[in-house]
Length: 585
Image (tube, rainbow, N blue to C red; front, side, top):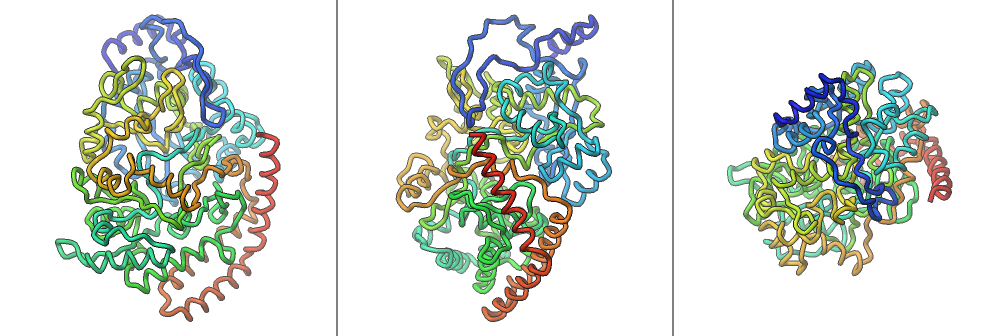
């Protein structure tokens, strides 16, 4: 926190005037929420420097808040000492520290109720947290510390009160990423492969997943080991996120997404029709076939069934894996090879669908944030959430500090070239900058438009800046496809080949499916456990005949564990959600 502001807040605290400061945020701009777009802003009179300051909600002290979340890694805390967090601390007196937890640790902490200041979770834990009084209702704090939440996300607040408070009609949870999820400069999810090796093969187009696997085999055959002699595999995954590897990678190909709070529930993003991943012909079986075929071709890393996410990231970084679950899951390979044309890029496919395009009207609900009942500084915690829901706060966390990382030019925010160069270069310096914060904790989505300047709160999503943002790898990619920025080719493939993104998917449906009753939860948990055990056997099957036999036995086991009842419960709730949506739109 700057010395002048420290002295000013201390003076106000001593005088007993802290609560009369201008409320945290409340810019006077129109709400973001009408499907993620904005339509103008009320003119606001100029204010003095003192009333321009954000309220310090920690009683004049700078505090660090701990946020519990699953699988966030350690990089955020490693690079937490940066000028972006300095700016947030200057504005609201708050810094953030992540408490990383795997599923087991997370569940133990939830069961014990001794939680850090904030907790990021999903609908499957809402009822437990509210009933156990482990989280605080935020309502009494909003007028003082959450005015931007009320102004910019009123529909989200109303929805959360109605559906996520055990009938109390109180605000306990705020989701992240409220707003439209349009494509960024490049696609991050899908068939993410080593672009330099793909170029060596002559940029082959594939017509189905079998041809795609064969292409990966050719890539591995050409590069069987790293320069230091380590074995290379075209495909590798990780097993410590439960059934993630059996659902998510194939979702983008097949056009599915997951129902929040469910381990097995899926829906088709083009038709909004429900599907259980374990149903015959479902996504689970597509994934089994994919990994089985990869193993038969000798291109599947045998550690896939046992290693952790961090193990996979280390292998990708070392050049031992030729595909990645996403560009954000490609280790530090691209950053380590910045300035070259070596790296991972997502390929457009004539037969594979695309991940982006959904309008998250009530955000990513599986990453909602609540304030624990043991939080020592609830006012500061609300102020932090408000900062993430404010236009100015979101702009700072996504894009950096005005005057340092970007400037206003004729009333429009423009990134400084040195900031763009830093982002293109990547690596340690970029991580140390703190720019970009973590999208999984941000209230306003990256593409939300600030009505004051007409630009996205994340300036790296401003398409007019894309040509200046391209690194060498992206430039070569664009030269090949004859596009101005990488994600543009995906738009062309949608028009040319009829593949689709998620723009027709209705995010309200996800939010309206309730938490299953205990009997369905138990059946789903047993099915999930059985599916994981069976997957290993089927993926490693020695022949097509053995695989077919294992599939039959596995399906019989699923039926004995109640798959039909689980399917029927979700299908019924999905249909009811569709009826509710009709009354809300």
